[in-house]
Length: 327
Image (cartoon, rainbow, N blue to C red; front, side, top):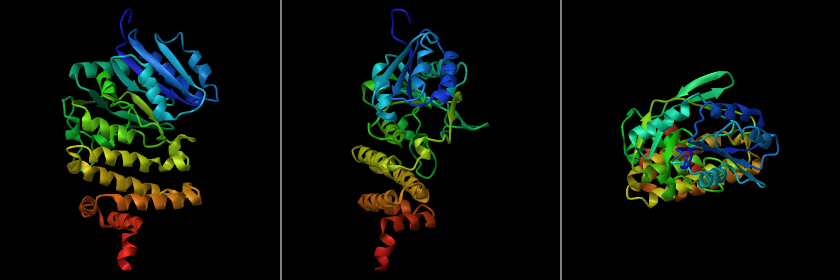
């Protein structure tokens, strides 16, 4: 990269991942090139994460470390890393995941070949010693598509359901348009409004059959395993999605897709409410009811007529509509 900007910046937010970070950084070493840059954002770690990062300063061609004294969360840590990066292309890597050798060069080759705003790829889910290939829910591969044309149909998984920032590579021009920044303050479900905004406003995407990202699932201590108030941020995330759709010319057409996803996620969180304190359970029920009642009635009725009777009844019960009718 002498005399020029990097081809690729890897944004690596980390917090208290000492147990996994060596594996992550070793995998980056096996992907390193002179024109690659790694921007690690240490979000106020209190374990040995800073020392592990320091040990790799001479192992990677261009490792930059930003350290926070006060934690800001994953969404804002990614924003900080994005702002500190200078590569033509950007990808994300979480501090407890890892990459297959040669994955990053192939990722760059894919976006250069297609010339799209972004590329999405498959990944491997890792749970203990188990590995499972997770495919992008889009059958049109190695084809340039309009992202907005990949949102529907509402009744099956599509690209907006594949909401992981790290499962792709993004042209810097998207950051210049404000499409790569995350909503600060969201501590769960931060990828959902980010993914929806990207698909509503980016111009081109290609799905490539490449699976070199290894995602660790089910780790103790992750937010998906902890039952505190941050678990309720999925409601705030969908508030942002619905607001985005309300201001988009095709928002009304795409709203049923968002509603079906929303209902499924709401019901999942309500089923898992035992992990919450009694006060948070009550708050979740109240917040869910208020939000359901605030949604556009005709669109809600349309979607509830298309889902299973059991799911429709559960949503109506959460909204208080069943008891209201009985009264």
